[in-house]
Structures are given as structure tokens and as C-alpha cells.
Image 1 (cartoon, rainbow, N blue to C red):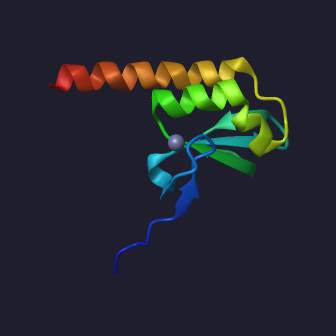
Image 2 (image 1 turned 30 degrees about the vertical axis):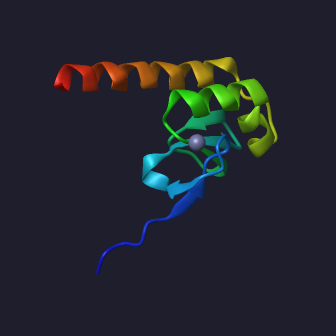
Length: 92
Ligand SMILES: [Zn+2]
């Protein structure tokens, strides 16, 4: 038996994707807004520049999570994007 993918909707482009392909941003009831893991309301975002920018400009994460999302969270995702781009450039 194969696992059926769990689909989640990106808060920026509204596409349904396998949640393993998406970034997860969690509003944790204790620690505020976290990435990847935590307990609480979650928002999902495609790991690409367009969706990150759209989320940033239109405050999509804030709206989805119904709380303030620190710039640091978006910065962290931005950094992650840059690193993954560098890695794939090296692989080629
Ligand atoms: Zn997206």
C-alpha cells in the first residue's frame, strides 16, 4: 500500500499540493509562530519566491493564522530559498 498524499493549500497561490512539498508555518499556542513543527493552526506555502513574495505583500500568513507573523519568519524562509537555490546550482 502506498500512502496517499495529504493535500494542503498554499496561502499565496491557492494550489493544492502534497503537504511534504510545502513549507508549514504554525501558530504555536506557546511559542508564537514556528516553522515546520509545532502544535496549532497551520498555514502552508510553496517553497518558491513568487509565493513567498505574495504572502509577504498581502500578509497571507497573518490572515491564515490570524496573528502577527514576525518578519523574521519570512526572512528565515527567504534564507532557506537562497540556500536551496545555491545547492541545486552546485549540483548542476
Ligand atoms: Zn503557492
